[in-house]
Image 1 (tube, one colour):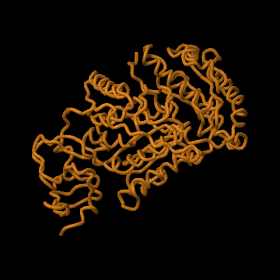
Image 2 (cartoon, rainbow, N blue to C red):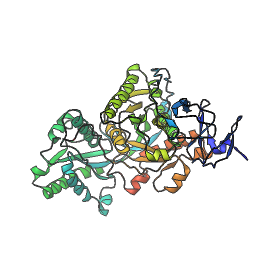
Image 3 (cartoon, helix red, strand yellow):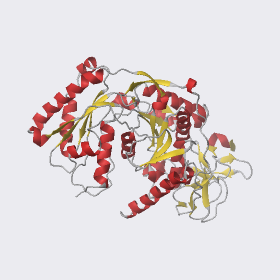
Image 4 (cartoon, rainbow, N blue to C red):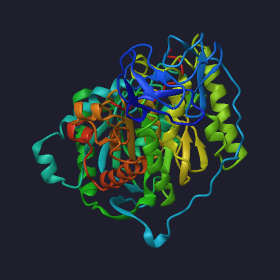
Length: 515
């Protein structure tokens, strides 16, 4: 019995020799796809790939019109195409610097969209309004959290209705580490969060004898000359006389900040002030077909309004980096992408690993076979806008438009870098079901398939699976994501915020050894 191919599978490019299954198929299922017809040779799971033609050993497997791997041996039409018969090899990519740059069709100023945000004295705009505690070292993490606990009372919201809460940026580092790049990067992250536009004011707490000395960090990161915040109060446990006295001093310092923070009100702000972090995690084969390209549409629209969108996760653009170099506005920007790829190849080799040691077990169960396939789907979040900037991890994002930040693929560390750089709203696509949140920046979680959305509806903000279901176009999903971004920026709570998630996801990327 034959079936309508479009009901069972999707082909993403006319050059593809595989299709992605929309639903599970049993062995012997006949799928009509022109001549010859394709009959599944075995049971194949939803999201996995089926061969459309004969593929000889060593020949490329093509999806998205791009190489995602090579056949280990002969593959016949109808065969399941996955890790058992696909391998990764290095192959040349045409970087074609700047060749695919398309001019941005900017929205006229009189058609600007707006959201209700917190305007800061330096011109930046917050989407949330927090008071914060930055812990310089793991040794002061508990004290920082004890201070936060003092403000988790029913009375807090009644007394400070315009403040979203008191949060602590705690971590596992700050000492037992070398100076130079590792310390500089940690300080850049802490400074970026502490002075974030979603934070009205902050204090800093250390132990006292750590490598990451607070006075040095205040000076090196310019925290003593802030235009939008007073010089932060800094405390050490040793200098304050112990844990209890430091807690009381910290509570007192926060109490001085809160009345001022509460005076802030949301006002009408252009969406050009939004800086969007784009992340994917717990991905499946639907990620590159539904949620990620839909985010790409929302990303392009935000850029058209003069806003900023940031793609990241350097190990997860591996094999697809040429799609970014071709969109770079200058060759120099494109070459920065290539240099990052080479840095990561060297970095992982020092630990006896390979950059293509990816996807994760969950990714593979969801149908992703190689890092090339995963990367091609991940890059789709960046839409088609010109690549206008490439940033170091946690570097201040200072150019509107589409940019890229060098981060690991590990989700908490990646988003931490983008938020430290200034992202004031985030989107996070997932096919397996990640439950990520990130204070002080609200994070919108987007399900790649309807089954996940229905199963984890308390965690997912948007269902992008409607595109695969055939009930919405990809553009309709993308525009729905844009509307959610604007609403959340204006104060609408995300599912992760409702659940209180976001306090433990501050994970600075540690590039150095522990001494």
